[in-house]
Amino acid sequence: MGYRTLGQPMRYQFFLVLSVILSQVAFAQNKVNLPSTFQKPILEELKPFYSPSEGQMEDLLKGDVISTGNVTSPSDKEQQMMLFVSGVHPRNCIRAMRKLSLYENYTNYIDFIKKSSYDEKKEQVTFVMDHALIPFPMVLTFKIPRITKEGHYPFTFDHGFLKDLKGTIAVKNVGKFCLLTLKTDWRGPETKIPNVAFEAFIQTVGKLGLEHLIRVSLF
Image (cartoon, rainbow, N blue to C red; front, side, top):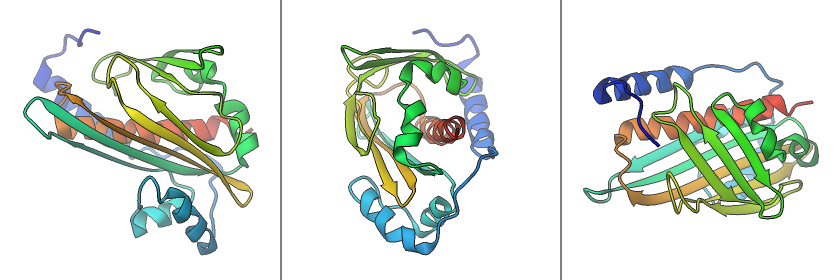
């Protein structure tokens, strides 16, 4: 899909500044505040995906969403990306996923998802994304079942932006709460988005996205 008409250097500078600002926005929500006894089971669950720092672990136990993105250039014509996002939902996984499994309603949950649909037979999700936060409109399509219970759910982007991206959504009860985790990895042709801007984008979108989803699925 086409880029916006805003000049390229100015667009990326604006995009990067906006991403940094939005990453600091706090959303009012009923956060959990877990004792340190939850640290061990959470670390065990996260071990296959990512090892959070001590500071990130403290934030997670306080109910904050943690998000880590990394973008590099393994060659002149390639980019490589990793994103890890995790947060503790104040409800158990069955209650949390009653709303979060309704992928076709995500356009009502998250501002930057303009259209959302789900093909039940093919188990295929399609999101059309556009926002001042996003450098250009994107269509994301991937196959995943409705997640209604605990488990690890792998998915792959079959085409479009970030084609061949591989990811896993993990849903795990910790006590009476639900640990939600997303981990994605991708390597492919350069996107024309500078690494620093791309990294800020995925990290910010990951954090804001999960914060929104937790907030809208509290009740």
